[in-house]
Amino acid sequence: MRRALPSVLCLLGAVLLTGCLSEQERMLRRLGPAAEITTASMKNLGWGQLGEGIEEARFTAVVTTWDDEQRSYTDRQEMVVDLEDGWIESVGGTPQGSWEATATDTGRFRIQADRAVDEEKVEQRIASALHTLLHRLRGPYNLLVTDERARTAEKTRIDGQPVVRVGVEGDNRMAVAYYFDAALGVLKFVTTGADHPGGSGTVTVYEYDSLPNGVLFPRRIRVMKLGQHVVVGNTPVLEVQISNVEL
Image (tube, rainbow, N blue to C red; front, top):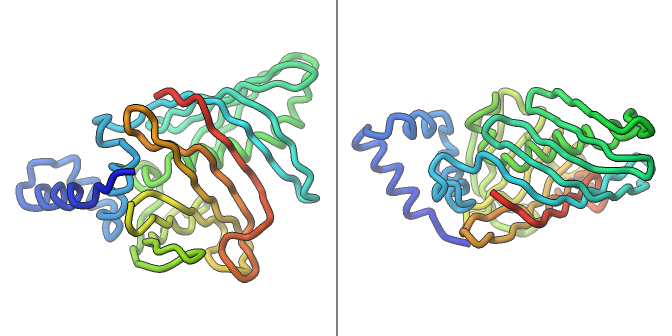
């Protein structure tokens, strides 16, 4: 992982002093108090190296979901995500046949399946997972392209780790707060529904791999229910293991 904070600070200074990067300046103003940590995160993820960011990624995903009785369901899917336009497509299968599903950041979901596949059952299990995964893969980019707004940026700790908490206002249905590693600037946690132990909500936990071109991309995304005494609880909701990433 690269420490990009000094270069980000230089970028911020150049923008504010020269005014020559109007589009960058507009984005920094939109990010408000979270501009420094958010731009550091996006640069550490490698988006700066790709100019206008990662538009599309293809990968293999092993998706595990848990129902209310904590029964788990696991299958392998091939996915394509467009982080710029806000959609994710998944191709999977059941013993009855294959299916293809698409979810968008506007909440739309579409599925096409072989005749023998029970589309309703697949949708019940996959729709929420795809919407969540699209949002979490976008990470801090959501603060630039959705109705989420960064409200605060403050140092704190979560599970003993020093982090910078960015609180969300506006549309916070998918995120109450983002938590960035205080030293490395990468996104580590996202809370949804609530933002404290004992609350009715979830926390997403990220683990990353470094790709050959230097881009960091999640290798595992776990969504857990908030714990009673700690933020990261022990009750899983969703886990996605990612491999074979192509940008």
